[in-house]
Length: 278
Image (cartoon, rainbow, N blue to C red; front, side, top):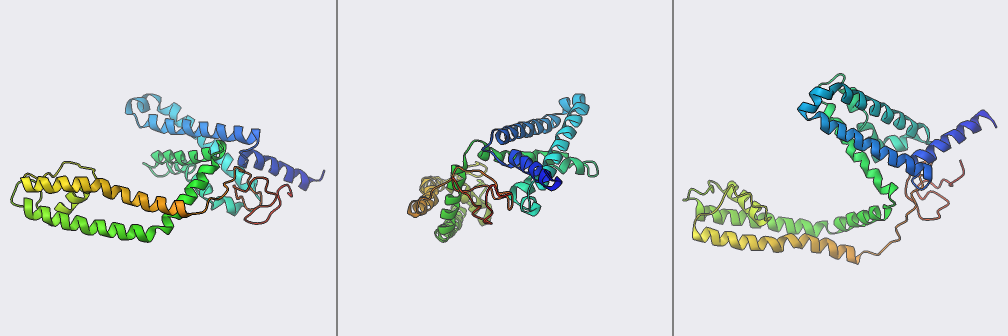
């Protein structure tokens, strides 16, 4: 076997372990990776506790450096195991992997950046690949398309809500301005109307007159109906959309690093690369 063939086989084995979630070795690697990520996040959380940090600072620091080095090695292996490294480096997961690795190095030169290591929590998104939840990813894509199609209706609805809040806030200012109830200006009254209409109800401003309380009661009841409107708009768009087959295949293309393909696919749907033709 030539040196180039051995290099290709070695790179393919690394690719199968790091990128494939369907193989036993790939699933084991991803599970171990998630465990390390959780440990890393736990270390950062513990370090924020002053009593623990003062007593175990050295141990926590060494542990975080070990994890950072492991992530650095993993990041490098991901780059060299694909034919076109840019596809990984500038991909969503590639950027997340880089951002979750560099904070510890930056903390050597810039104080106060160490806590950014908690961004590693974003890497937990890989759990979708491990647990074969690609169908949920497909559903989220359909949801995004439904949101995009209904953006005009939602924009009109939000415009109506904003105008309504301005009107209601102005009315409440006229009713409550003479009272010591917090309605000191129209903008502040509009803020109250938004808080009340969305049923958040901070309670920092409250009407004191009977008329003001009556109007507030109507706004509260109106809020329950308004909250349901965007849900109905998006649901309607999702119902109208055609159902598509959502594959469970998580095979990653070694050429362009595209991760999701139709079941039993022989070619990458993005670049046309034939699977197994390394």
